[in-house]
Length: 113
Length: 109
Image (cartoon, rainbow over all chains, first blue to last red):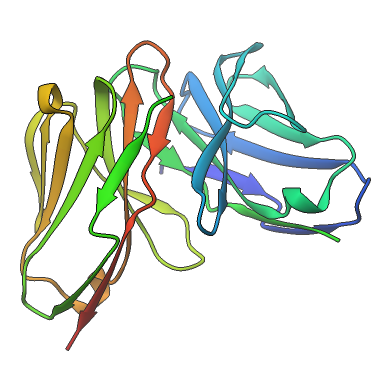
């Protein structure tokens, strides 16, 4: 069963704490993504990864970094979280950057207080 | 940067009616994908086609790449079709998917 798994599903952090969001996929997909979704702003791309250690900034990378040391695993890191990073974060993957479908995880709802 | 415009922003139908959702994008797309999302839910891929017409069940996606537009037709709508429909375009060579803000569909009995 092909899937993208995100952990944790819900997270509450204090301002200034570090946050680690994990994402895994079991489809050997090359390309993985991190998006955030906010009311009125829609889905915005934070980072895209083309393969292991091959990451590229998306449209809103400031305040975030990523790590991809294995093809099936892609992490999003917030160093010193801010309240404006409260959002729903989605991880996604696709076979490649060409014409292939993109599959999404169930999301992580992060609240920074 | 790339922009994706969806219309209408919202749509109310009676069960059994058809829906036509539009998607226009600002630059040449190599991929157009439609997603469905329930409130608080994840994105479910519906159809992905870079050009031409593709069907699955009651859904038909049509993409005219050179005119930078796509559409999603839902036939014989059901109450369970209610939710948000998102269009996303993939730009050439980057693999980045840019999303529209969605069409909120409500189907009433």
